[in-house]
Length: 205
Ligand SMILES: [Zn+2]
Image (cartoon, rainbow, N blue to C red; front, side, top):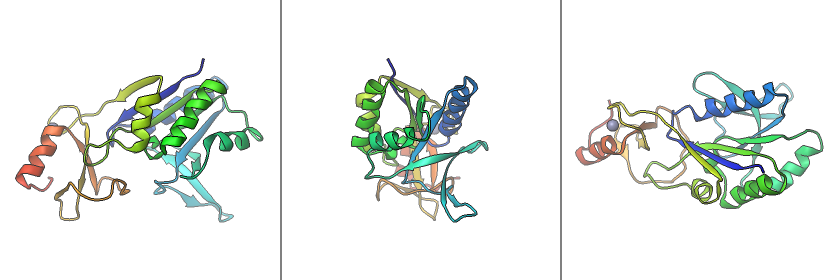
């Protein structure tokens, strides 16, 4: 039976590179992967020569691939049915899965169980306040297999917090859960280093 996999990590833990390498492994065996991504993070999207929006899954180490965007209101079971009209789908890989809705995670579980298609979700565990994203929470509840993509803090401990910083370099602990940004706004670190930044009001180096 196919499984729903959740592979989580902090920002910069090479989750996307892992997602793209997993896709490559499937492709090498002649399998067709449906690469999807929630619409929330569109930083790497671009318009092609015909003016059509192209969604890209892009890793910091340079790997990238074109993906299908999943809108927040979209039912992934329906999207899969449409996809299957023009393509075989042997496996589904979802990047930035923390931005899926709870319902969409349930739909992916349904697909794994009833369509017998393995679904591999890569994404963050928690936000800048260490709270679970709704999509992450539902994945912890429903995934058949859960594993961590590890990365380290500057101090050498495991990074588990996606610390958010303001333009003044001060750590931010209030605000909207979703605020898209890269290295200029976020830094993954261990909980203790994060606490020290909060308590001492220090700016990041
Ligand atoms: Zn640390």
